[in-house]
Length: 393
Image 1 (tube, rainbow, N blue to C red):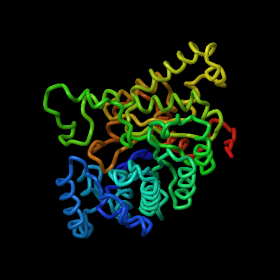
Image 2 (cartoon, rainbow, N blue to C red):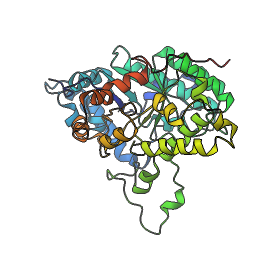
Image 3 (cartoon, rainbow, N blue to C red):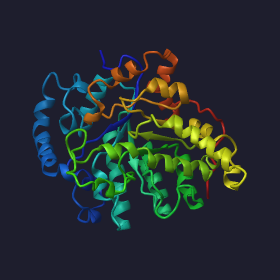
């Protein structure tokens, strides 16, 4: 009996990197230029965990119980399938998920923020080869590539390369594209490539999304640990502004007409919470009504801004949010399930948490949450609109 007792698609899981993962897939002339894997303030402790996990993995894989009750078992590098492809397949056999998006965890620290374009996009190519190879041969595993967008032509090339390698979604930072809005006309070449490849863009916590000015941490008191007791996760003030980056990004996408220009473009907002979504949609429509007469771009929108988001973007709630309330307020088509496996934030019974939160909802609404909205975002199910994407040449 699998953990999932219903059809279930997981919109957030992770690969736990080992030290040489990116370098193994990098072009030979780039390998020596890549910085080492940066584990942040988790540093030496995390490095020791990686070494221990590598030592014990072979022994663990021989146990009869390996790959059983994985959701309730060890997390991080010690989880089943944390960094080994065959083990992840065993984990999915036990989890019973129909599909699972797989993001990296720390790998972007080696290249994504480099001022050197060669390292930034060369590292991107290596990452996307690596995550695609991890997912190769199992249709349940969906590789999420990464995509810096500051160089439009380089980004466009990486989309087609990642699609050829096997990535089926692209993680994009919820931030401006260099010095441009994501809705700038030059960015249309990026959005057209994603539309042509039927790849949704994914906004995810991390990736330069934090908008809290560092001065707010200077309150004259010792810096607390994050909510898991470490140093690299969320603290209270970070949590309170976590969705602001996604709101700014999506507002630009709607206001600048990107979704109007590319009718098949879709996206997901992952591990940034979703309790804010109903109010965000209300404010989008209120702003549209307020500025439609004075702002020609707002006036040019073809329909209510909230309707555009509702059709094109899907969100993953946290397990402590009132999912039932947000569905009643904003619509059943907006939200989807995620486990965050094998990160500890997802807990040891994510399905049970959400089942409890949605106990008062009907089965069709639950089915939308657990798999139908995911399928629609990924293009596995018929879209609400039959319009075709417009390529920007």
